[in-house]
Image 1: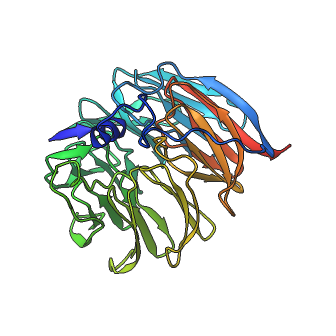
Image 2: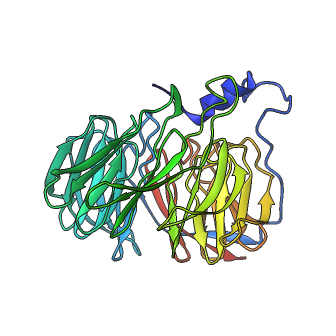
Length: 380
């Protein structure tokens, strides 16, 4: 199995350099607009190495007013989400590649060596660890009894939250060529929903791993291995009785959480996480479009096409806005109502791979260099 980071895929597909002469395949130039809003930095922290060169997407986790964040070199911190004040910090002897998440007193992360690790959220002390079959690039997710995680070789593992012991696993042999990454499982009290590199979304009984239903979100098309890539790297979302999911070179779709019945689908190519606010789903596409969709019908309410080929990160809804970061590290903020730009700033010249985290009107941005900022946007 071979992995392709998205930027490399763009270069392969276009047959040219992003930084060469202008021929219609280069990133769109930034458009000028009247910045009606400004950024307010509530606090900032530096978390050592931040993201690793191995294309990690370490996203912070928020629980009960505390923000938990990990750096690829093994630094893990707990911070007051309102002030940024440090509660505790530990240095673990791991190269962290996947995480973090928090549930019922435990913090979970995965490593390049294939370890799934649980820490005590009160002080960062290790509670248990278990070895899996491959590198962990997704965020482990848990309910009260099961923690589920995907490894880079497309295996889904379910472990006991109490001690990490094996409960069940599912092996989905991946295609020859895939994007480097995995969707994080969606875990409820009774179900585990997981997307695979073969374009399938599958629902499992959380307790015993019995398959409840499966759906194809994408079908491979084309003659080359690149054209046939249909990874599900965007983590599934749940709102009431509907699961929302998207595939690279496939579609964005909605399914019944219980039966897997298809509710709607829209052709799309998406590999970054999506977000929901109110009755709207927001997504950044692999070509650089940002779209807003009706949750009930999938209808496109607006489409912003002013950042084409800028290799956008996840679209994150917060307050009345939706934000994305491009490959140059520019943070773009748009109105949720119409997709019009309201503010822009350069957050980190090395970019932001990790999906941003929203808490009401606050946006937490964890950059590749390890700069963690709590931002708000307000009218000028």
